[in-house]
Image 1 (tube, rainbow, N blue to C red):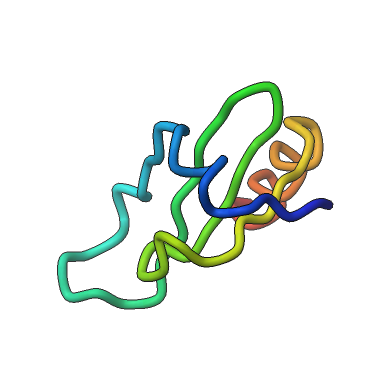
Image 2: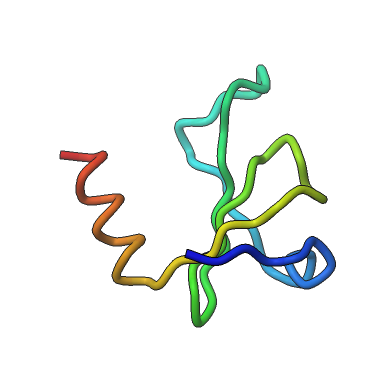
Length: 65
């Protein structure tokens, strides 16, 4: 796991879960590139966590099963 600075993360294309509502609850956004970048959807300029695609797939597999 790594963190990325906000200026570098601004160049990515971010996606919020389709399960996220418009009422501004606890949500994350994900940007897939060579690595998968994850951030708090309420803090665009905040820290970004970066993981490998395999690590992200493993996480998603655990939380969706």
